[in-house]
Amino acid sequence: MEGFCPLASGSKGNCIYLGTKNTKILIDAGLSAKTIKAKLEEINVALEDIDAVLISHEHTDHIQGLKVLAFKMGIPVFANTETAKGIVETFHGECPKFKIFSTGETFEFGDFQIHPFSVQHDTLDPVAFTVKLDGIKMGFCTDLGFVTSLVTSHLRNCDYLYVEANHQPSMVHASSRPMVYKQRVLSRTGHLSNEACGKLLMDVAHSGLKNVHLAHLSSECNTHETALQVVRGILEDHGINLDICVAPQNMISRPVHF
Image (cartoon, rainbow, N blue to C red; front, side, top):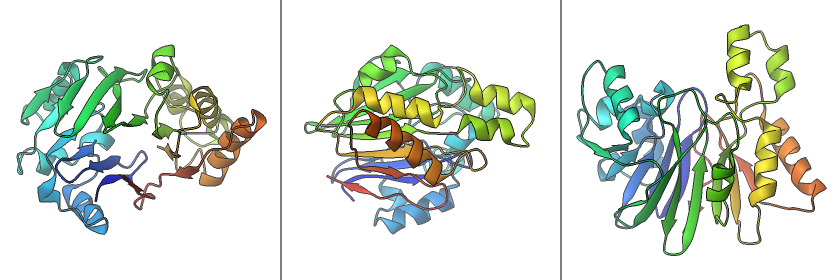
């Protein structure tokens, strides 16, 4: 498949396929290799054809699949230095075949021009990515508690966006989750609310933005319907109409073909 397709999105595992005829990568690998393989087969991609994995941060729901992809299959892993250290610690000293990037510095891999930029999250050095290909710009930005001016600037002028709409604050407060969980999710290093996502999209929307995937929805403190209603409501109040869909946890999302 030439394009991108979120394979899973949420606290139980995150993984996005992004590929051209010549270069095929995953952004995060938070599912078992068996599950990633099966989901890739749904879009006619072989796991053996994956050239690299980009890692945004070291939380388990983003790196679980490295046990097989990196250690057994030898697929290279792109990460910054601090995230690489976190991955090694998580896997008790085992070290993948790392390709280290510097946060804030653009690098090229195959057909892609990749720019990792900092986000606010409770990990060592978390990043989001913009990826450029033949005049197409894509933004992949989840696991952030607060939208900085840096985030907004990098997500401008994208053709496609994959952005977090994790929770509805009222549902977090009403949930049975422990207070420590609620405080973490709602903090500036936690996760992005539906309203914050809508405001971000309001700031970066433009006539060339073709599609938005809402990502990393909480299974307990959000619903697809709530996320879409809140985000679309904010945009419609400002006369903005975007093609928006939700990236689900348990099935592949609507693919985007180049």
